[in-house]
Image 1 (cartoon, rainbow, N blue to C red):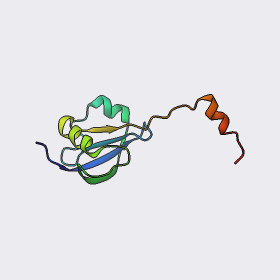
Image 2: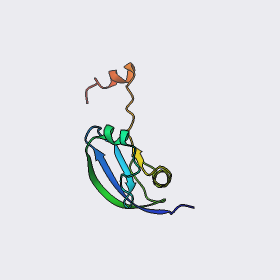
Image 3: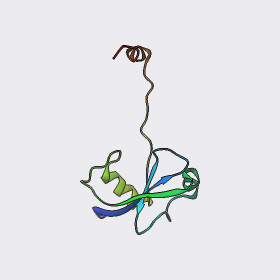
Length: 97
């Protein structure tokens, strides 16, 4: 069974807003495919943190992050999906506040 704790580094790419790359602190970006690195652009270290399976993350499940890093060498957090409002909801935005 893989470790339940992992020291990881979180990077932000220069080309994609709200896209973050999680990697093991020990392994770094060595296992990240070159194509993905190219798509992310220049990487900037955002933070390093100790993850365990019970840790609360804003937009990711810590267990999934740890599992993906152990299996593939990285976890890619994509921006949240934004859904267009339907026309009836757009009308509500015109109401006085």
